[in-house]
Length: 361
Image (cartoon, rainbow, N blue to C red; front, side):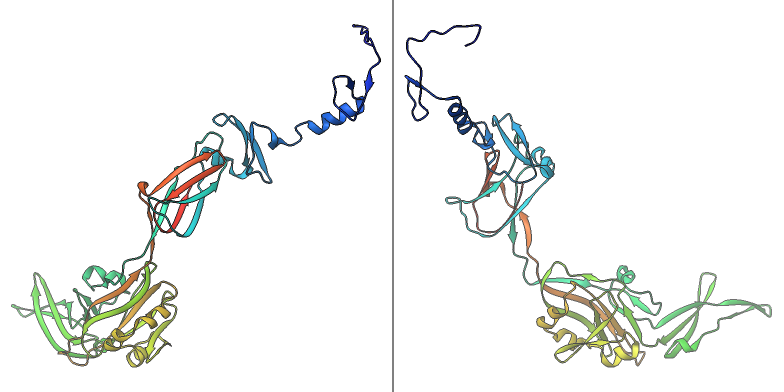
């Protein structure tokens, strides 16, 4: 017995490890076993702990709002402070104002300082949209490789009038002056007329001529990332000598259309003149073939411009595209969904419409 107190029993103490009674006791071995069996051996069994979403590589933090301990991923500690955003995608949601579609999202937050929940709704793209890709105005000339023999004035065409400033060679007699300019006839297909006129103090030689056949080549691509389906491309122009070829790889290779398929073609005047697509056939290429070609979601065009006579009218007015637009993700109106933080480990979003959605949280 302890030296500090003294116990006097009126009868012997009976130890019985098989029962619990006011008249018997347990051995020290039994007492130790019961302590071990009844201790709180698992953290989650404590009343002030919520570790419903526990997993590997987490830390335990205390939530003052919940008055409980909870777990947070090591790599997502910033989430509890609203420093990062996650996204959940659901396809084919069916909901309404009277019967919302419920989405439960596991979260980990200590104090509910969380980013604003954002719901995006998928919308079908616009249908049968007609867009003018080129009107060939003067401002669009920079969209093509430069060529002094091609003019832009809301149509694109070969120039037939060329002005050259003549050189003053000196006086001839007392009342005459000699001017000259050497014309390189080889740069023209034919020269039809030459006239002299004065502009201020300058003497100008105006040459009317037919230039050689030219290629008008786009210097960049038309972005078609917004296009879901091409209905058609349409060229509006005048003349029978125009031809077109197409590139869908940034101008590395070029294509022409032959009856029912696309073929490779060299970007040379002779090849495009012989094998290029004339305007009627270009406008007749149907949707299927355009969409087979549009795998890279970009396109550029090159045009052959040619005149056989000074009276020929050969020009292109417009390049139009009719298409169905890509679908897009639009912000859902706030009255079409509800957000509830059921606990610091569960976010609930109630969707009051049907369709495909993305939830940023």
